[in-house]
Amino acid sequence: MSKSIVIKGGTVINPDGDARADVRIERGQIVEVATSLSGEIQIDASGCVVTSGFVDLHAHLREPGKEEAETIETGSRAGALGGYTALVAMPNTDPPQDSVAVIDFVREQGKRAGLVDVIPSGCITLARKGETLAPMAELAKAGVRLFTDDGTGVQDASLMRRALEYARGLGVTLAQHCEVAELTKGAVMNECQCCTDLGLPGWPSIAEELMVFRDIELVRITGASMHFLHLSTRRSVELVRAAKRDGLPITAEVTPHHLALTEELLSSYNPVYKVNPPLRSADDIRALTAGILDGTIDAIATDHAPHPRRDKEMSLDMAPPGMLGLETALGVVLAQGSFELRNVVALMSWNPARIAGVTKTHGRPIAPGEPANICVFDPDLRWNVDPERLASKSMNTPYVGHSLRGRVRHTIFKGTPTVIDGQAQK
Image (tube, rainbow, N blue to C red; front, side, top):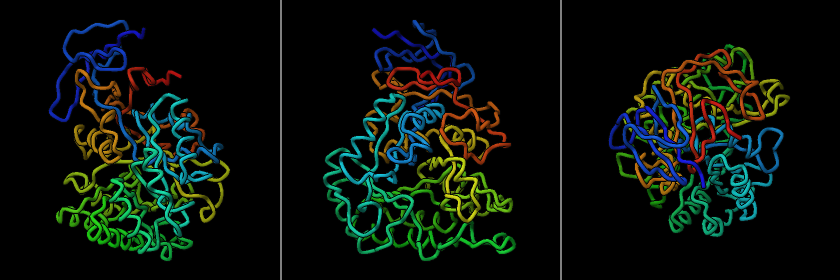
């Protein structure tokens, strides 16, 4: 029989309020939230926040097919260290997640690792080629709730409309990577004066915004649910804000790096700062922040994108886009100093659990009878990133030399500690 666990001395943050309390866990469930509790295992949460585990809507775990960069096990461990108890696995694997066989493989590898719930997303189109719809009904029957061709936007408006019509009938959500590919060929950074000065091909904001606008209008005529991935520009936020005012069933996410890093970093020609969509301007960051504060933006998602060292050491035009994000997300977000702790928990736990369709097990209150998927973090701890000590198989983090604020101390998954005192337990 498993031992009882008590999380001692923390501040519990729930949707209905905050309280200083201990949390007692038995057999995978929270059984008591009160003061002066005791258990066979005691976990110190002094000075820490105790809340539901984080849910990442956007993680590239690379397996199957790209295990040199990451495996589901190593990505899960990175997630646990970052306070996550659930990760939505993006479908741009090899083979892609467009069949029940691959979906089942990803799910089973997640169970085998046993560190977080790995939730496979499905492709919108076969092989993410944007030509033929994937077997959405079959995948939905197998438990897929979120469909995306992330890495490429669905370019064909007629095909996207048809996908939305199917999605509405199936009760699933499509998640769009907003990029008009004809406008971004060869681009490596945001289109701005900086890229002109550097002589680098520019990636215009309109490439994102045109697809945001198009898909908002497709949602308007189909009534289907849409989630916008990694929005990065002021105008994108304005479009989503207006669509929400109209009552459309739309949600949106931003990444920590689009809240923290600006286009000028590409002046170093360092591919670690190359990402899709690209780092934008300080004005865009202000707009994204405002979108979070007024509720336009629903979630912060990592877009965790590991790459082998040799790939990220290629020239800027040849290196693949993407950054690590799972272990640093909380520290990057809190370092911005713009958000209350309750807001951060909503953006990283409660809201993404709802969007991912996992509210029975994640994003739950810290209360008796609830599943023990819990994150404990110190909101004030300052720390620096050492890429050699990250759990990911890759090291392409842009935060070396940055001072981050807030770090996960403990993570509990299904009642079992996966991280204690900042150390992974398996």
